[in-house]
Amino acid sequence: MPPALNRSGPPALARLRQIQLLKSLAREAGWRHLAWLSGLSILSSLLDIAGLGLAVTLLLGNGSRGMIQGLPVAGSLGILVGLILLRGVIQAQVAIQRERLRSGFTDRLRQQLLHQVFEASSAQLERLGRGELLALLMADINRTALSLDQAVRMGQSLLAMGLYLTSVVLVGRATAWPLLLALLATTAAALLQRSGSWGLGRIQSRLNAALQRTVGDGLHGLKALRAATAEGWLLQRFARETAEGRWLLRERVRRRASYNAWRDTLVVAVAGLWMLFQGEALTADALTTTLVLAYRASASLSTVVQARRLCLGNLPGYEALSQRREQLIPRQGDASNQTIAEASLIGLSTARLSQLHWSSSAHASTGLRSLELSANGLVALTGPSGSGKTTLIDRFCGLLNEEDSYWQLNWADDTWRLSGLAGARQMHQLIAYAPQNAVLFEASLRDNLLLGANRHQDDIETWLQRLGLAHLLQRQGGLDAPLALAQDPFSGGEIHRLGLLRAWLRDKPIEVLDEPTAFLDAKAAEEVRSVIRERAEQRLMLISSHDPELLAQADQVITVQPSPASLPATAPARNA
Image (cartoon, rainbow, N blue to C red; front, side):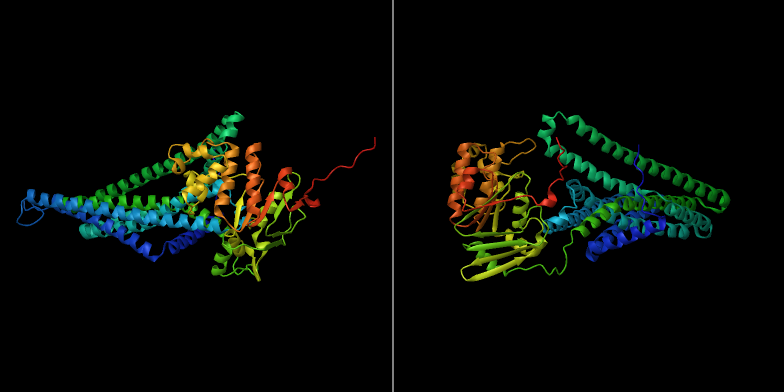
């Protein structure tokens, strides 16, 4: 079944929404971008009109005098060919510059969106799905730029059509007025015709997100799908979504073909009736030139309508982008934000802190709303699975409920206070965090470990050898070989140790490790415990673990229990 059109109320409201979006898109592009785009469009139209003028003048020149008085037709034709070639070269440069403008605009939109995603709070990111975000970055931003480009092209074609229609009057004079009025009536009918492009464009936005979500799920969960022999399930899901995409494409082609047939019939009927009524009043030159100009005007009209449809059909991409960006706008003037000077932050990142106190005012799934770490001490969190240890660690690290968190850092006789989302971003520069499930990127092993930081290769190799990962250096390309991750190239234990190493290479004054000995055999786990013992003597250290040997070496063990509100209700026991 084809999807229902996603209409936005009465046509007047939809048209008002379209105008508002176009105005906002124009402001976002900027006057310089629009000026360049408009100038290139006008130049393209003038070149097209000039080429037609040269051809008409040559073909309809008087006798053998040719296009230029004193030159034969062959010489005039050579000049025409040269000018047309020059026009083609200029038009190619215009097309290149238009593409440069378009790609620059899309790159700017992508960078802005990624910056907003990176700066957004965890609560804001919870509203965005992976498929939606990928669709925005890969498809909807391209559609946004295309919509703006087609809006300018529509203006360009309207200008060209106006010039052609003016030429019809100048060439045909009084006899051309009926034809001109009929063509204007055809233009009005074409522009006022409802195409449904807006509704189809909204369906396209939804399909883009669905397809990106399905493909992302398939690649991310490839091993799970194979293990469960569930490839058919995902393929069926993909087939349903691509079927809607095929319906959408067919519908657009059908509507465009229907319009083209209607337009061509109407234009030919208008021209035929005009010729019939004018009869012998038309000279051969005037008739031929007028019909050529009328045909070009109708072709410009076709471009206007096509550009309008493409503009409206792709404008929902900008609508989706605008809606998601509004969800990512940070709270302005948040009183909870408390930061410190950048110079002090740099000093703290290399200092040895004596104490860190964290507290939160947010409702938590555990009863703990504060933690305190001291130097030369290892604080360990333990508790049953699902009790909220990882959630507590994420909040402590400023990765969850940042707006409601507060940190106090002590060093010597100085005290610094951080709070809110801005304070959490500064805490990220002081904490090295190794989550329980490490994430690898499709980059080199070096980039995966350093994430843009600088460390000497000897340091990396020494760590890999100590953690039993020296065999990774034997891969072709060593540290600089790219990782292809469609199929997992590493074991769970290797990925986990790489995640720990990534945190240790950051060398921050605060380290947080979530289940550091999970997924490891006895030998690897003992090596990790040894590293933790050493590093806990040099910095503040917080871990979560079920490992009894690791808990035994902790200076403080905190047992985390889920809050009563998060526990499932239990039925009362029945009497035997």
